[in-house]
Amino acid sequence: MSTATLNTPSRSLLGFYSTTLGKKLVMAITGFILVGFVVGHMAGNLQVFLGKEVFNRYAALLHSSAGLLWTIRLVLLASVVMHIVSAVQLALLDKKARPQRYVKWKSTKSTYASRTMYWSGPILFVFIVYHLQHLTTGRLHPTQPFPGYHMAYENVVAGFQVVPVSLFYIFAMVLLCLHLYHGVWSMFQTLGIAHPRYTPLLRNLAVAIAFAVLAGFSSVPLAVMLGFVR
Image (cartoon, rainbow, N blue to C red; front, side, top):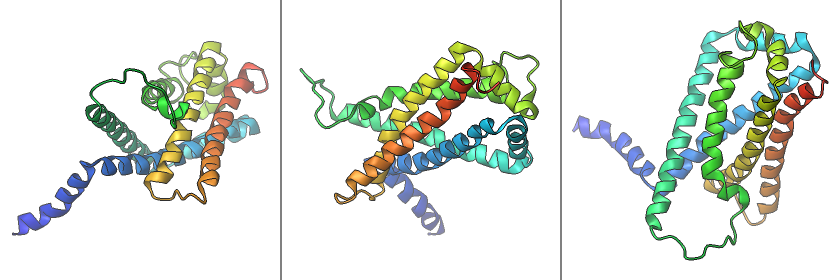
C-alpha cells in the first residue's frame, strides 16, 4: 500500500509527460528558463562596451561563487537536455501521425521561423558546444595559453578578431532570433497566456525579444571586427 502510494505521483507525472501536452509544457518551461538565461547573458556581454576593467570585473564576479555558478550550469544543462528530448519526441510523434508525405505541400499558416525550428535547434546546439570551447574553456581560442576569465575582455577581442568565427557567431544569432520568435510565441500559447485580444501584443513581444537578442549579441563581434572594441 505504501509503495503504491509513493509511486502514484511519479507515475502521474510520467503519464502526463507521455502526452503531447506534457511534452509541450516541458518545452515551454525549459524554454522560459533558457530565454531568461539568454537575455541575462546578453546583458552581461554588452558590458564589454563599458571598457576592459568593467567587463573583467563582471567576469570575476560571476566566478566568485563556484557553488552558485555550478548550480546555474546544472540547471541550464538539465533544461537544454529536457528541451531537446521533448522536441525530438514531439517531432517523432508528428511524423508518426503523418507517415505519408504530402504529394504537394504548401505552407499556409506556418511561419518561416516555425518551419526552421527542427534544423535551427541542432545548429544552435553545435554553436553552443563550440562557443563553450571557444570562450569558456579556451580549447579553441586563438590565444594560447588561454588567460581565462581574469582577462575576459582580452579573450573576447582576440576571439572575435578571427573573422570566420565572428561571421559564424552572427549566423548563429540569426538562427537564435528565428528560434526565439517561434519559441516564445509557442510558449505563450502552451502556458495558456494567449488570448485573441492580446494576440498582436504577444506576437510583437516575441518579435521584440528575438530581435533584441539578435542585435545585442551580434553587436559584440561586429564592434570587434570594425575596431570599436579593441
